[in-house]
Image 1 (cartoon, rainbow, N blue to C red):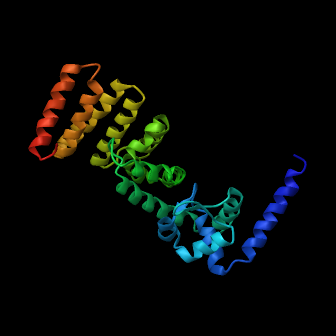
Image 2 (cartoon, rainbow, N blue to C red):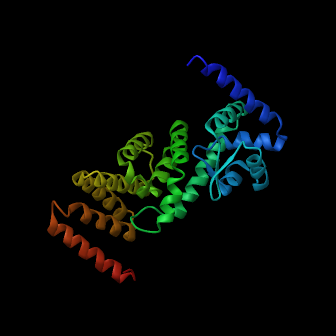
Image 3 (cartoon, rainbow, N blue to C red):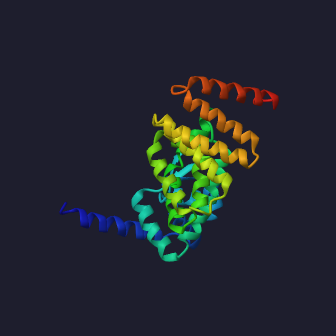
Length: 263
């Protein structure tokens, strides 16, 4: 404990000395890369921060950035905190967080985690971004962009099955933020996501309520495919409490799917 302060001061001085040796482009890149939490990909460095691969490689060579695994990078937390101070002083933090949100929306759309199953590699790619996703949701909450936050949450539905209560907390916060002005389709999908999270926690009664609300909204919107999917989910939540209705809904959904060329 007594030696902690001098050690930290020495470490900071070492980091400052290393940063002072960087070119302007490298120092600028290091500062901007501090926007990430939990690492980033080559594509994210380029799209969010405008950092090209050659500059990223140069920072790796100078031990200020580390390769964490194939095509993924990160910083030691002490270095990231130093760079984050520079980022806060630059006034670019919110702008870069907006760009991070847009990048994560693309990642989420490509992963397509709105239903169970699929390639496990997509789940892994999203799980690696968990810290960045949390940061993005926090930024969206603070900036009042609740609709974008709900959209991101819904696109990543199956990502949250490992921590459903946490995701339900985010849903409640963002729903409250957008009360009275939420797009009906997004509202329906958010309620469907909430239903899935209740189902994961064993609260099938609450799941049914959310699925029913989503089904009614999607039916009113004329989105027959989405409404049919919501009906499948109602059937899933009713298997224990109302097996006859669950079977009827499942059979109706199966007929609809086969009529539209889906197995």
